[in-house]
Length: 615
Image: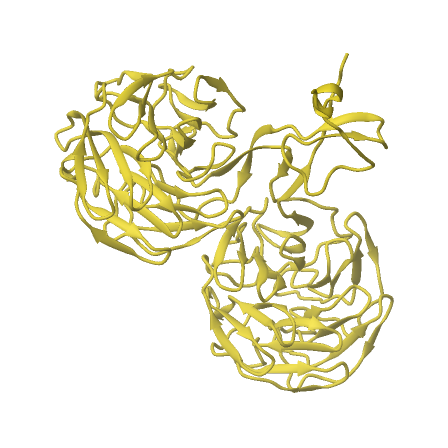
């Protein structure tokens, strides 16, 4: 007897909106659009946050949201970890090197072979494993070599193809069992700088080149079953020095050398290669997230441009029904007038800039002006009662508090004034315990803190706490600092960077629990006179100087600092506010004083349905 499905076909869901959560391949009838729809994968590369170092031939491991890049050319031992939005420092390799094999995950990785100096005679036989914190040297390869490729895990890996210290091509392969390397069957063609995808028992080597000058570049692919190598389908474009990831039946190969720099992407379905979207930056000698699937991977570093130079560029590949828009800084609407040493409070779509200087040092008239921002337009709000600069401010647009700063013609004229804002006017309230400027402030109008700064004569580590009417003493900072910035709340606060003296910036951060400060991890780049937005466990620092004007921004997750997309223009002493994924910086001092605004929007992923057209 025939079943209902055989007679009537499969049922299609009747929905008024997209399924949530959705799954690739979902099909439904959209009653609002009067159309049959489906979630169909779309492939695209998007910009990720740059690495802290510009390097080629990095040993890549991990996935798109938990990636690893170890070593690199010129030979370094540095390791960086990727969390899906930015790069943070990891433990250093025992021996700096490049052009070896990298595989495994962020918390269980392996690096073997490679150069440990620019000369081929200094190829390494060293193997190291990573536990997410530190590298440990384990058993050596049977022979020193570089230009090798391979993959698998930290306990079951294979490497294939290599160049010996004498620059002779080798077709020798070895397998790793977690404790030692064993020579196994050779590949069919000797070559170097190949890509690799898959595992120890189901792997593949892709493309490559020989050692002639100029080299012959290959498109051949070989498949490995754990015992033998057999010929597989060739790439559409011959390439070497590429990035790759995935499995033997679902692989991706991208960028490389043709011999010109390549931006091409090809995907493998186990039978044939097909062209995919181009990368944003053509490059070679790049790394990939070796453990990542072919639908969601990373392209890391490499050599790019003309003339070719090592790069810190990261790109993310996604093949899904989600459209991923990378986080980025973009131009906002200019302030009505030039200002710097101003403070900011609120959010990107309901924020404000208050106070600041309107001229260069030596002629320092301060302003009382408040300008409110809705994400599109600046509108003048109520004036401060005391004109000042180098002040701190916090809270939402309609319930803010501003405190401290400098006033008059001399920066040494510090202020202890505190004023509260109700969205239209400022009202004086209880003074700070001492006159201070260039300190950090965060919290809300009824529960805020002020930390650090400079008095009329010296830097301070004093913290003061505000309850909505008066200030009381809090716990002292561990490091005396000025030109620092804060975020978070009175009971979960953060200060980062600052300076101990002119042009002596800090990387240290401290966390506050409402009574005492505890040292947090250092940020990547020295930082003073910049801005911080967010919470104690999800903050972003941006702009500032070290001593040059910075375009960089970094994210903090409560433990580590990681890279974030750069701003368009470097500057310091601007007013910045918001949260980690949505913030703005207004005004500041770059190569000159400015009234420009830059806005940050974090990465977004939007489910996008395709309409099924029967015409």
